[in-house]
Each structure stands twice: as C-alpha cells, then as structure tokens.
Length: 309
Image (tube, rainbow, N blue to C red; front, side, top):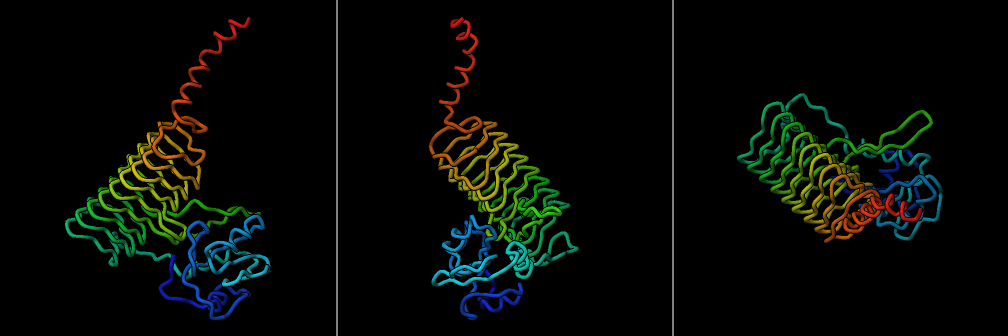
C-alpha cells in the first residue's frame, strides 16, 4: 500500500504515539507485509525470531517492539505492540467507508458492461469494458477488474484476509487495506471468494478461468491462462505461475510457489512449492507417477505378506 503522498517519520510516529530512531524527516512512502515490501515502506515485527528478517528486508522503516541497532539507511519506530500499531496505520490511511448505495458513485464502469440485479459495487471500484457481472456479486472497495471479465452469481471479491494474532482474551484481526485485481478475459465461477491483500494486491492473471466455489486467499498471485476447478482452496501469499492447471478439491498451504504449466490432480494437498512442467498428486504432494506407483505397491501388501508367511 502506497500513501497518497510522502510522510515524514515524525508524522507516522505521532499517529501511533511512539518513539522513533532516525531523522525526523526520514521519508515514508507506504506500508506492506514483509514479502512485498519495497524501499520507503513500513513493515512490522513483534517476535525475536523475525527481527533480523525484518531489519534486513527491503523495507526502510521497521515497527519493532525492542530497541535494537538501526541498520544504515533505515529508521525504527519503537512500539510496545507493533501488530496494534500497524492496524492503526491501516485504519488511518485506508479507513472503512460505508455506503448505502448498491453501486457507489465513485465506481467506474466501462462501456458495454452489464451489472445484473442485486449486485454491490463498492467505493472506487473500476470495472473495464464488456464485462458481465451476474446477480448477487459483491465487489468490495478498491477492486480493479479488466475488460471482458465474466463473474458468475454469488461471487465475492475483496473480503478481508484471514489473518489473526492470538491474544489472551481471543484473536485480533490484522486489518486489510489491500485490493483484488482481476486482469482482462478472466472468468470466475459462481460462489467464489477472493480475499484482498493485507496491504498489497491479490491478483488473477489475464485469461485465467476459475470454476465454482473456489477460494483464493489474501495476497495470492495467480498467473495467466490458468485453469482452476471447483472446490479448490488456495491459501494466502501463494504464487501460481502461468498456465497451471489445478483440478477439483485441491488445497494448498500458504507462501508456496506452483511452477509454470504444472498440473495438480484432484484432492491433492499442496504442502510445498513444486516445479513447473510436471504432474502432481497426493498428500503430501509428489509427482503423480511416483505417487501412483506407491499406491499400486500398497495394494500388493496382502499378497507380499502371504508370500512371506
């Protein structure tokens, strides 16, 4: 998430009421999660295990809950609760905007696009030309949809990320200030849910086709010309490269990469990153030929035991 203008370190420290290390005029351009930060961004860290990763990341401003040596060229915001303060900044720069209109006055809808009854189109949504948005689709604030996109009934774009911090009295949600971006010629089935990024974008690449009842988690990037079949669940921060085929009821863990032109067979649990150009099956995931050989050998166990006896 980039801010509408550059802020100073002093301004940010005032918003979250904390001390800082660095020049008061140090420039702050935005805020992001650690996997998508760039120079000028704020990142937060609240566990010693990840201090070094955050301090050595591309982010140049770190909200941290311990006074440490500040790396050269960076600045620190010293907070007793970085998670809370990151939420304060998200709320400050991307506050929730209520609307009582089915289609927000700030939404931009392209020529030749049809919006069927009972849809909700949120604030600052952009929809390209020649799209069809079927009934009961909800498109949350800030989503961007390209040209020639078809979205079937009941689908929801831009819901909050499933991202929580456990507290003694329950779970605190990390507020979502990101977006969903749907590129040109994408087809999305009925009753799909595509969550927005926490601070970045969840992206569906050009020409990709998604079947009914598919879930895509926050900050996931799906490449061009992918096919994803029904009841697949894709976790947050996944990268699916171009021309990947994912068959029904596949589930993935977060933070993995599925390589270009990989094929994931039905009911596979994608527990790790996999190379492109190969076919995979099973839980834990393996190349399909190897997994099918294993299953064939398992069927032979009674015969082998009988021979041994």
